Length: 162
Image 1 (cartoon, helix red, strand yellow):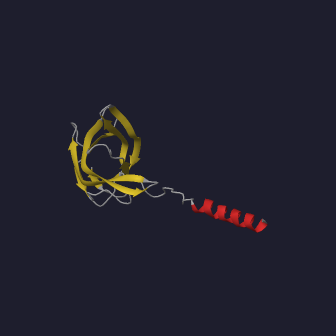
Image 2 (cartoon, one colour; image 1 turned 180 degrees about the vertical axis):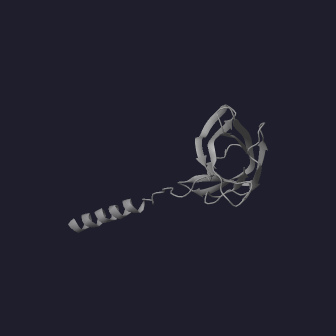
Image 3 (cartoon, helix red, strand yellow; image 1 turned 60 degrees about the horizontal axis):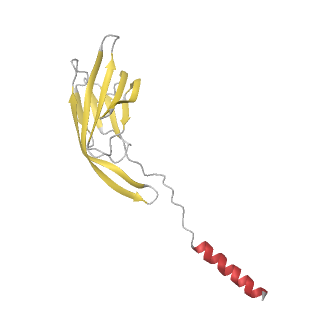
């Protein structure tokens, strides 16, 4: 009788553990962001910091701060996944009275990619096209698209010459 109990307990143990699944943990799937590098307009291979840079995302509900008052030679900006266009104002303050504001709009096509059950979907962006609406004093001289497909944030997608 004891042998039957042991066999039944072992069978129930095997049955209960065979129903377990591997834990799904998402570690590497993330929607990539837009990487912008700033270059010197005189020497397009030299990085150039933008002093007192303020970047604001433009949303239908109003502006939202993204980066505030820094000196950087590159920025990483999130693109909207619920729309095919994202707009930002990039402003630099050269003095108390002189603030240069340019509005950048990025048009693109979103492409949803299924990663896994744990991660769900990520969005990649294709056919990136920038448009600029300059202010009175244009500080952004030129925008060059380095990579029109945004699949990762490892390298720059857009060069801004100023």
